Length: 468
Image (cartoon, rainbow, N blue to C red; front, side, top):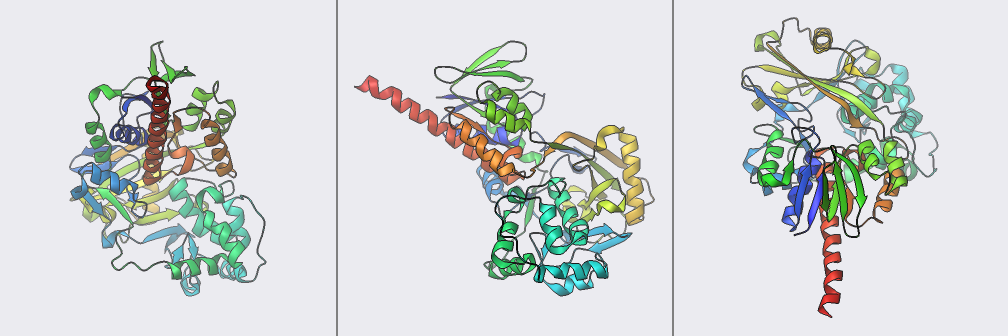
């Protein structure tokens, strides 16, 4: 069996190792820290399921569902309940339901926007300019904020689109790549001349499923159940915690990895599932141009807080939670009503999950108590919650979210083209081609398949002279 070093033990690393074994390779997962799973971590305390990182995954991208079924956990999939959908945006001093009929974050119907209190009369009139403004036929990437503001105005960007983007990417729309995040928007303006009319066309032409399923799913014991199952599927000798890789060099066949402290390991292939700058550090000698692009990927730091209340202290919560307009002046960027969205995670309690941090801000410069005091103050402002929670948690993610800035797709295309010159070496993870859990698993599968295929080709080439 060919030995493949998988550097990084988060979801991408574990999924890649799992796929490598199914492809007949022997993985060795080298994780710098003491635990595996990366940001997919679940704490179970006081009868509650507390997600430390992501809390769900998108179903229309099938990779996680397929992986869960392969792991024998299909019965533990939990769909989003009917009462767990429907979000609001906190802006102009109150909560406004997100207008129905959005697609790609854009309105496809006029009346819901006209009735919404999110936009001022001037903002609504400016949004109508999308129907008459000339289209931009230019090629190439551009900031998402620039595109939306040009077509629909600053209010639609700031009060509707930007809060949604913060919830997904923690990003700054004025530096965020449209091509890397919502490439359909570039095509909509070029083909339809109007983002709204183009989004409406896509929505109406979307195939009608006979029985549409849930948009998101979670797991009965939390998303950490997936990484736990991946770890259980890998033999103990495949897992090396506390093994930061300090150097990577090519051999005549394969690679030599040096662990911090001096230990050296040889492998036939390598899959890097590290943050972009850390991957760049290992590639600096053998792929310097790719390394330079990886060093340039910026990150935003995030914090996730969980606060549990008695049901009587937080009555009448509707929907799944709210997002926050940046101009509102709150510390939090969003709040999930876990009690509604994932009721199996908070039996007998109202669990609120609040997020802090976005591009250009660092929420981690204060201690836990100060951070939690800010969160409680925001919850008083938005929801009128005055009681003290009976459980509180803070989970910190320094440099936790890669930012897809303008030109990201072109830069990553260049990185992957350069890495094709290195036999049996691949890259996978959130910094590269998608931040969601299904995107990460897809990249891990692709990396494992590419490396296994390259090693099989080497074996055939080495076998041929012997047979002759």
